[in-house]
Length: 154
Image 1: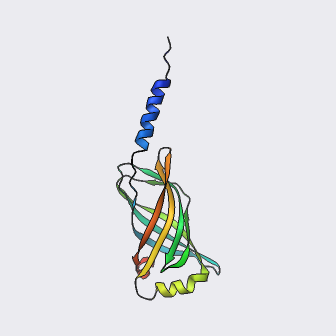
Image 2: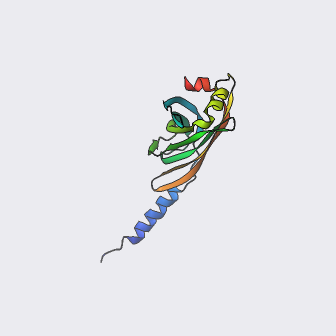
Image 3: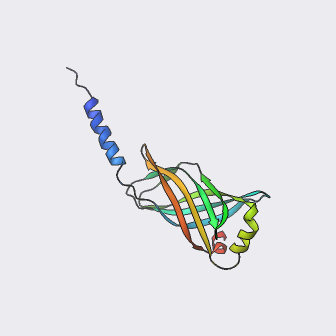
């Protein structure tokens, strides 16, 4: 007599979903690194930079996409995107390479603020889609802190 494999498949599926849905700790933003100008234009310029994160989870994650907006002393700096699959190691630092498209309308005021010699308030808000296996969740990207942009661009 043939035994149905459906009950064992359902048990395996429910265990897999339980393991995937355990609480995922949000990666910690450690800083912004390696800012460089890729393209300088009259209407729009592109700056690439790395967001330095730490994954506090005991398992690897995958990041499918991220996007958001950045401000410099409450002036719009631009919109950033990441649409490449990134493999995030367990309990380790990792970096997200982002492209920031800057609207040149605010460029002069932003550069005056940036190179004034003082620390500036950098604010980043956005959303990232990350997860493991087949379960992906949207996570907020939030950073607000005083930075020395002269040191960042070196």
